[in-house]
Image (cartoon, rainbow, N blue to C red; front, side):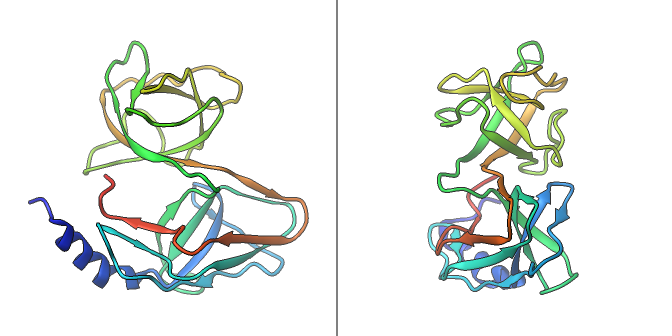
Length: 200
């Protein structure tokens, strides 16, 4: 049964409180950052609107030197606990739903996706479907870009195209990995961590 906007907002209002802290992932396996001053940071949420609920204040996560962060992660505890969500980092994040229409071309159709060559892309299942051939723990590179389609590679500069052997739907999100040569902070701006009930 589909939910109305009010229904999505109601579920977000009651369910978002399960996510109490944000952390940082160095890999989608998932592998959380460790060492130095790293610690998960508490999060609080603004009111849900239009099926989306965002953080209501800036969050600053201390990152140890030598770390490359690929995603921000949501947990139900300040330490240990459960990973409940994760998403991309960067100033201009894109996300969408794509469809693999042909196993011959390995093209993913996602109209007006906005990706450019070598954007880093994570994929995940939507609507209970399996991800066609692709792996949720792999961070891919976008390549062979048109306005409405793209392919994926495991290497930069339009490397070998991933062979997608099954048709189906998938969710995708852009992330911009950030390498910290010295200790620093991953800053999540107010409203930048979305729980999006409209997506997938």
